[in-house]
Amino acid sequence: MSKPVQYIPMYAIERAAGQAGHHWFEPASKRFFGSRVAQEAYQGEGGTFFVSSEQQPRSNHPRLYSIRMWTEHLPGGHVDISTIGEFQAYSSRSGAHAAAKACANGTPPAHIVPLIEKAKASVESMRQSYLAEMRRELEVAESVASPS
Image 1 (cartoon, rainbow, N blue to C red):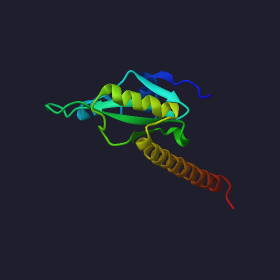
Image 2 (image 1 turned 90 degrees about the vertical axis):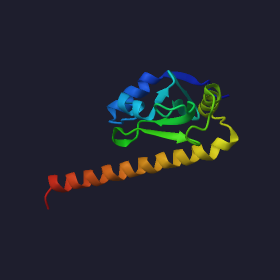
Image 3 (image 1 turned 120 degrees about the horizontal axis):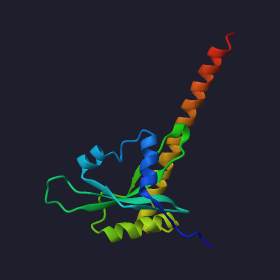
């Protein structure tokens, strides 16, 4: 039986992103893109997901919603925010939240499954790159510390 989806406060994600040097949640960034985020994210067997909405500043365009996947604990303190599906794919807040919660639960809508797999593969590739970079830095440091 799967574990229930947990709700985690967005301020915890925003704080972790800021500590990692990520600018996604900075007020100037959100203002530039006309972005808003929900107060809570969904965390479960499928990962951690949240909903953002964007509206072109000073326009009559409707506010539209996107599903984002949050990944932290990457080597070197890095974090990642991936858009799942098309940017602004949802016209309703409730539809985006239902899909994000289903993603976290591990039961995403069928059309989203390959997109999540692609995002997770991209994150894994980043993880491997960070690890390789850290290994190279360690090798250099060791070679400097122990002269031949």
